[in-house]
Image (cartoon, rainbow over all chains, first blue to last red; front, side, top):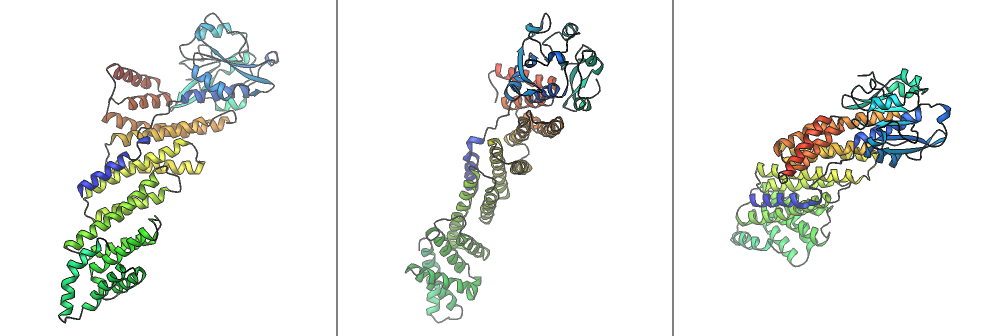
Length: 180
Length: 311
């Protein structure tokens, strides 16, 4: 009987060898969420009339997986009368100032660009600078991603946004958390 | 008559001689058993079944041989008439008769034959459970579980130890967890079916862990099932997802990631140099926005690979 039970155990153990090794899905989950947030930042805020022509651009500095996600799901979607374009940038592209062409939203990954320098350079430009780093707002970002209870949230520097003629939508404001 | 015949010769012959000697009281029923066997062997299968069925309902109710013969007939009809149909009522009848026979404590050759017959029936339930397991669909799970439970009950009847049964039960639940995980990963389920499959996968893994708490593979696969289910929800996020929905989906996913993490840590504690566990921990921490912890496991992963690969 022991032998029989052992054999059955063996049969069971090998009956489905194809599912023995499940693999962790290594999709970048943070990139998925950030992409959706950035899309909402683009769709639910308002820009001055002067930049409501041509393509609506979201520039991403130093996060290829976020670019992939944005291109895959959001590129070519309408942002009011404009068509969404995703621009992939490296830290070298923003080393000496804002990128060309103009980006309506510019996301800078932590450690991929000098946020303070960029902020200074964009002082008179209606570019929504978004970061994900400690004291991102203090360094000049208008929106900074933060982590609260393992969840991705964001805080906003509304006063600075107004100064740059960017109107933050109520929907976005209502989900913003206090700066950390 | 197959394996039924030798039993009849060895067990019934002395009885028949006894009957011949004039002890008639209990012999009429016994003769009915013999008559049923004779009918069966001469091809009158329906009559044989009728004879033996009447016998076990009356004088032969306490005769293990009679119940065995009834079970044997039903088993043979299951094979020949119903062509091994898994839904055959004949197989159930055969099993019920064999159980009854076993309860009457048969001895010697009868016991051997009965065990052989029970093992045969048990194997058909086991095979049915395996067929359900392979390419499991939402509708098949309950039937597969029922078949396996029947198989285990037969094993128990045949004297399997509690440890043997637990081992088989743990392996079965592990495989059922994997099969449900596979079903989820295929991504073809509706929302309700998907939720049910997740609950079933987790339930099977937990049942397996209750029997074998330190089983690396069960822990690892449970963690992966939870984590990957969260990722599947996130992948559905797109331009149509409102900010409110995004927050809601995020809450659901983070809860799954948080549930997955301690399970993956338990697996890691058992086999600290397994590459897939290190990768799992690195990924889960990243998804929980814990870059330092994610980086710690990434470095460990690199170190294990540099040192010549993990376990």
